[in-house]
Length: 264
Length: 285
Image (cartoon, rainbow over all chains, first blue to last red):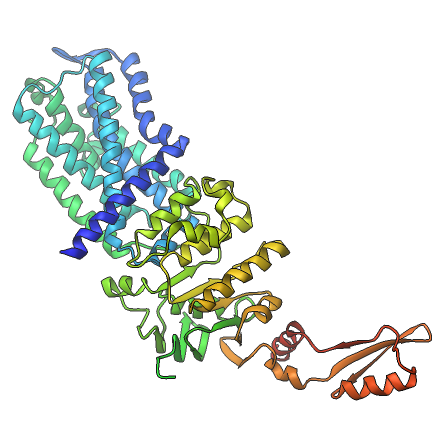
């Protein structure tokens, strides 16, 4: 019990420290937190067409960006910063202290949670203010929104940690990670209406969590009858939860098995 | 000695694929001593130290650090790290945090941390307490590394080339810090490229080459230094003369008689640690 409390306490202290460091790196603040908001402005302003009765592309896009935001603050942010920490010797130093590995991961997960809340709030704020986004109208939808955010960011966090062994160096990390995120965004119905994509793209995207997150967010933010416009003709809520759960478990196992504290 | 040694290594072997990095090392470091490990790059020095620190596992051999096998995984291994401090060769982490923020944060990791303010004074970073790590000079950055190494009041401190890039003055005051830690009972394993540093600090030095320990001795007796011939030089008829002698005192008396007292430009030079060391390494190549 005492050990668990200590692990949590250090994890909490680490998240506070990590958040402080995050805020002091101006480029990461802009890149991680404001980039999706900037995209929102660009796409939301340019594409104002109505894609179904009572639904504009702006609304469709905001829902997709909220889902993307979870990928940005978790997967993308971690898969870029952890290789940098490896290069800077941060991880090796931590490994040489009594700090438990779990505290490090708790610190990361809490950092992602803080960033994710800020990001989602920003997107919701500007989405409703400027691009006609409607807040969820029922308790069920709020509940769906909550678990989508929680499960989505948990998934995104563990996959970010798992993927952090792939970039060879901290400097090259963003060149490896960013294209993957951008391609997934194109394939997953963020920048285009999903059903307008070629079917091979749709099938490819369906293997990854982002497609399911964007669809889930649309179920929360778009009118209920828009469901008929989706690939399956409904929101596939149960399947979404299942896919995210599978990725969460896979990501967790992979990150525990493959995590590296130093480059060699 | 009834207390177990700080470090005990028997038959340590480490291979990377076909390449043998450490080829059977035996080493004992007693509690409270400063032990310097010397050796050229690629000699197996870093590999050995990293095995002792728990970063790498050995292929074979017995390793006990403070009575514990550093390769132990999991919670027990992390707990053992309460008793050791590690100052790594180079780090550029926590660049956006201030000196005080970083040191106070690391103090949280340890069961029995030292006083943060006291550590800041000891490493001489009082004036830089609110400076970000990225604003520190190379020497100051190294002092921060040392502060993080000693914040947990370690029984055993690993120092990997701690004074690289220091100016002479900073090096002297760093040595004083190390002596203070020793006087408080800390065992220190030092690796360095500076032979004067080993001479100034170490109780014993071990020379490692091609994965093997060649010799372990005190700095004054390494490589038969105490018995090695000394060089006596003097000025005579405008020319510097020199002779090598196992018994330089006799030479000096003889010269003094010849010059009727004052010998011009007299010098008696014992081989320094660096010369001895280079001879030892060179002999093997």
